[in-house]
Length: 356
Image (tube, rainbow, N blue to C red; front, side, top):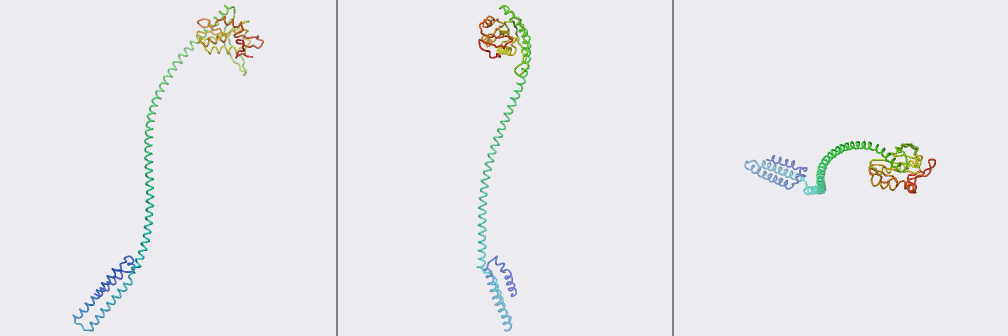
């Protein structure tokens, strides 16, 4: 039994080393164990004494046994005292624990601040995520709008394609119609050319007859010639009706439809003859227009410019009026001879196209 007590004390010393007690820090529990050991030692001493009495051992042996027991108790108590000295001071352990707890509190405080900062960051991220979701929602709406616009554009393109196809067909039809019109125009031009040649010839014959009745004998025909203009270039001129004697010259144009273009052409020919070919003119210039029809503009210009106008209906402005106006100084007439500078006059004033 004594060896068992010694072994238990040894185990307590090993288990309750200072290193272990730094972690456990349960002094009260260890002291309770030590007290139990003391009680066991006392009980052991009593049992030894009782056992000695029963066996009838001599007094010396009993004393020896009692001494041994006392020695064992003293040794046990010494061991217990050593254990108590080896047990760390609870106050020291508590201070260390408080320091550790303060450190842990600081660490926990830092962790809390970190967690709070993370919370703020998470809140900011949530706000950003919410903003991104709003933007994504807006983008989805825009995409939907764009898709709708693309769909409408596709429909419009399809409609435009149909219209373009219709326009192409219309253009094709127009080209066909234009082709037919060109054919007709060519035919009309050919017919006009066929008609215009007899008109020029008929104009010369008709005007010769009327002039002869008025006592003026002039042979009329087409006039073709060339002249050199201010730039030094040679220019050709063609007049439908021309003829001259010593006193009169006739300058005229003929067409199926007499319009403004024929009036301008006639007046330009007169100006060119005055400026570049004065030998072709005489003192009295009879301007004449001959055609099937004449519009109101031509009739008015015939009065203004003293033009002899003849159509299928007869003399719209007769030769007698033209000659009378020439004699009274109105109308178109030239002064000078072929050897001198010719000047054309209209109603007593220099003509706009007259040359110097």
